Structures are given as structure tokens and as C-alpha cells.
Image (cartoon, rainbow, N blue to C red; front, side, top):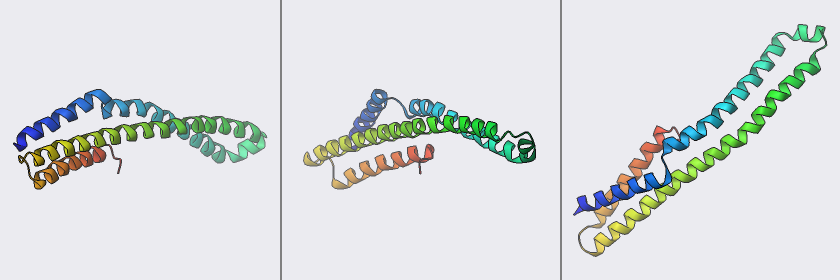
Length: 146
């Protein structure tokens, strides 16, 4: 009987996966924000390093204001992109937590019906929940979220 409940649980997991999209889709969507933010950070850092390396030249030609304005331009890009990256992480975490919560809740409901019908034991419930938690840990570690 436990195999029947595992199949039902796997089917519900697959349906939730199809209904709410995949982690890969969310990660690809989020990656463009992250890459833009990283490029802006790299550009700002490169600008500062160039200005510091060429300190005497900048001073000699009295270009401090020009260098500061260029740095502010790159820093502004970074400041504009950082919130988008954070917001996309919030969406990713919400989606994963929602799917995980639905799967755990449906597993508990299905197993509790199996326990009340006498087809399952409390140990089977613990085993089913443990399997779902192990699955969640694999997903979290796969995306380097810990």
C-alpha cells in the first residue's frame, strides 16, 4: 500500500512542478539580474582601480571631478540593479517554499488518511515526510542556497 501513496505523492509533486514552473526557469530569469549587477560592480571597481593607479595623471590634468562623475555613473548602475537582484531572490525563495509547503501538506493529509484507514502506520508517515525533506535539501544544496 505504501507504494500507492508514493506514486500519488510523486504525481502531486509533478503537478505542482508543472503548475508553478521549474526552479531552472526562475534561476534563468534571475540570472540576468545578477549578471547585470555583477557587471556594474566590476565596472565600478575597475574605474576606481584605474583612477587610483593613475592618481598622479588624474591630479596633473585636474580630472578629479571627471573621474568622480564616471565612478558615480557606474555606482548608480549598481545601485539600480541590486534591488532587482534581491527581489528576484525573494520570488525564487517564495516559489520554492510554497511548492515545498504544498507537497508536505498534501503528503501529511494523504498519509493521515492512510493511517486512519489502517493501510499505513505512523512510521510510514515519518518515512514519507523524511523523503520529502531529503528532496528539499538536495534542491537547496544544488542551487547553493545554504
